[in-house]
Image 1 (spheres, one colour):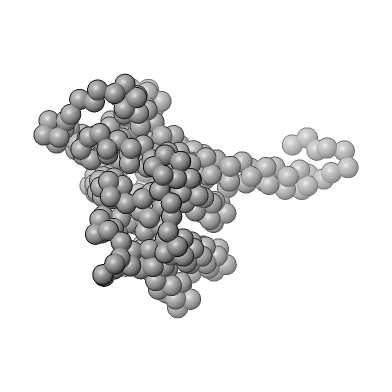
Image 2 (cartoon, helix red, strand yellow):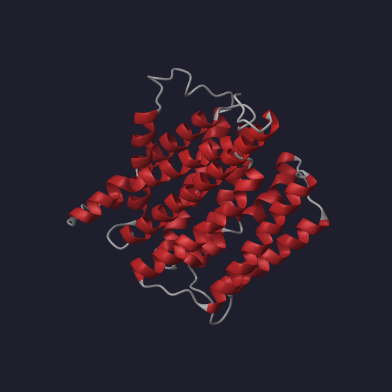
Length: 304
């Protein structure tokens, strides 16, 4: 490494590390913005077609884009996996989460659905014990309970609470947490590109038999355009996520995933004229604060 006059090699290394981390943070913020765009388009398309057709558009678009960039023809070992059953199960969990999340968008505001979905880190912390052997201490159990209290503030179960469709968001969070845990398991044996390819191709293949029963041809060219670019936001978001984690540690990047809530609220207001209510804002604040504390404990205790 060529050092700048007046600076040691250690200074240059520290400066390069800071630059990589800042770039990683920027890519992480861009990734969650892409995911927020994906969610907003899903909610918009729900008004023109069946939700399962929306899911098909998301997976098919994502698969086509991913295939153009990385495919078994240009990379012969791409589909080589030592755990095909787990790959299929992970893809099924992701598909289940997507279906339930898009169903929730049909009835809920973006910020409401996303606030509930942000309970995923708590569910992952619970599931990681029996599945991965990553048991948690009492402080993180308290954070989990507080976080779920925040989810209850958003959903307000009972008379006068949120729409019954909030159960879709809860189901989506459960499926997504299982998906994350399985991703951790597969990361020990399979490359991330292989895992991403299986998620796209299996999700697209699973939706094909359903398509004839729900298909409706849109008349609006704008809707057709959104269907075409829809999946690109998902693939772009995952790609940026992968690159971000190559440049910076997950413990530094993870807190910035909550910026997705800001984008979701903005898209909800400007596109759908949805104004977040005080219950959603209060509950989201509790969920985010508890999630950040979980990340802090993981960083301090090294995952213990």
